[in-house]
Length: 330
Figure 1 (cartoon, one colour):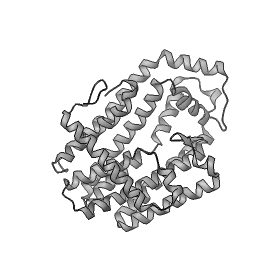
Figure 2 (cartoon, one colour):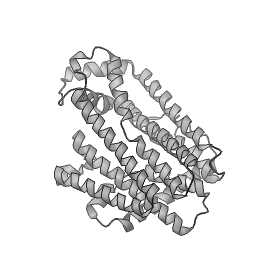
Figure 3 (cartoon, helix red, strand yellow):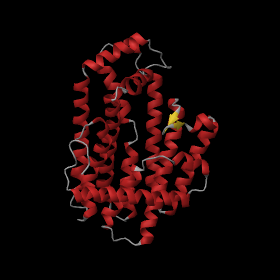
Figure 4 (cartoon, one colour):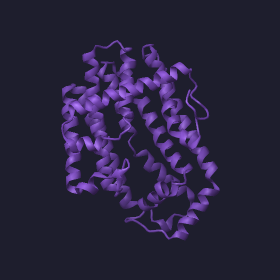
């Protein structure tokens, strides 16, 4: 079993099965990316990703087919995951420009190396290539791709508008205003791509609309838990102020603000005082979303198989693997 405290509530064999499934499927996804995408710059952008959305799409597909699909159908589903990675990669390229982030996955952001203009156009190129893949998979898959990207773009537009019209820092008299702003930003993040990935996997298996909704909701719950867990890691590592709180304050101003060392320390002291309460709040929210995902995975609409069992184990497995570096499990 995993070596961190509070291991998954699953047998040793099942844990190994999830490990092996994710490892082997990740290899298959990487091979499919290499054989599908010829553009070296796009490959460079895609390199280093966890492939979580694609892995969940593959698991959703297998849960629907019970692993009895043909090799051709499996390869077709893998091609669909390449479209997921292209859309996700394009969103990261554009996010880095909007947020002025200088690094991505441990190296310089693409726009830093190649310029803003080329980065924007390369992101567009990735989206077009993803759409080309979606078109090959039919009308429903194409609509899912377009609806997903539309949701991502609308979220970005909402965030930009929020940046322009946010409450002035000097008017923020209560802690609740900061957390209200934080929750608003969290809700605008890309849980939609997790949702679309799982729905897309089920769609590749030609599932009915009621089953597609189950997988869409399942993916969204995992996406929300994942984002909260990511922030919890920052909180525990002492990076929460710089990676979350300061950006929130920036978003509440029309331009980037520079806080003095003394002001940063004042904010840090307030959060340190309530750190345990904040941590517990995060853990409870993560547990809630993970619990929702597990419940959805047990739907009678999903056929029984070892892959359905892995659907139930995957949310905690993914989140606990993230949180083990800070010795927390859910």
